[in-house]
Image (cartoon, rainbow, N blue to C red; front, side):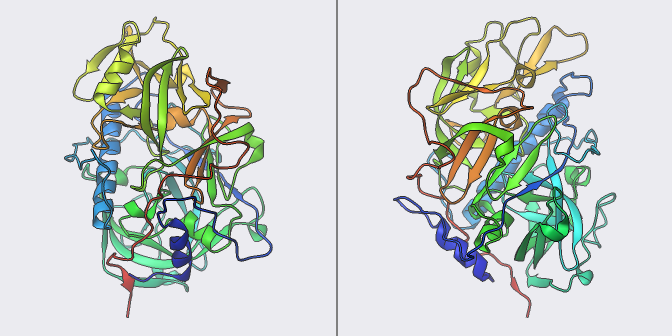
Length: 480
């Protein structure tokens, strides 16, 4: 595969190592500031507009999530990576293609009734062509629909003939999300601009040169109906279908951003993706960083405890922090253990793993802990609402499902992320959490533990072995 100098630079920084991994030194004497990317949120089929839980939509979303991780594990194997012990590639799950997702018009990243996607504006080509892109920390590929796509009605389409900086690469790509939804087409190399609308475009924006991405000629299934135009994965290249670094990794390697970090605030108002560090106006106090616990390519951290009413319910598990997942998903046995400690909780749907409690029940407060603070989940996010109109039973947002990720790995989606300011550090391979300064549904509180992982905004100095970088074995290469 063709590998630009920026990819090579970052590859050196991402090589797995047993010892501490320093940040990649910058090559520019003057560093640009980070950029905050606004955008919009969309409805999630987990809830109706009036707050009622919908099992059909929730199961469809759950199965899409499971299939996304299935495909990521396949990508990892195709890229020469090794699955962690206990991890297996699960069979494909069927997903009913729904039409319940609707685009919101607000400028800010806004979650409404448990949003399924978080989108912002990204430009591709010279001159720039703008697209509404879903930012997903649970996958690693960037694609936009092409002008000849016959199944992309209502989406903005990329016209390769209008970009003077475009290179067509040999080969094809096909990204399957396992539910019958696919994006297939051609690989390209071009320049990308991540818009920063908080300042005039002439004064800001993150320009990434020679970005490798995919142009979709065919979309099928739910990808046809999603409100965004395309998707930008923000996980590691080990699980990339194209086998390349994601756009933000390249942005840092090219000196476009000052820190190898990006940070999310996901909330009902004032949400943003900050690229190149943290937005200090959105959080208070120290950031609690935790090293990655796996080299498979996910934003996965260990030593996790789920608490109920301040008391540990399930402990010592791994957690993947995923902005592309609405729910919290755990292994069935561990989730059953968790719910056994909530009076009145019962398994409502054995096939999907959803649990319910009486709507009138006083459910203990939910929090997650990594050896420092308790990061509390707002009850309005934990409770998905009545399972049907007039029902006295309410569904909860923690689901027991076999993801194939092992018996000790959970996925913490937006139900968790909306309660914290989340920072993803790809220089020190760590995920950090901070207390939201305002507008968050919940804040953190001190636990009984006296240990604190990380101080200030400094990541831990000895992370676990890092995910492998692009190994240059993909099929795409420059056209002759």
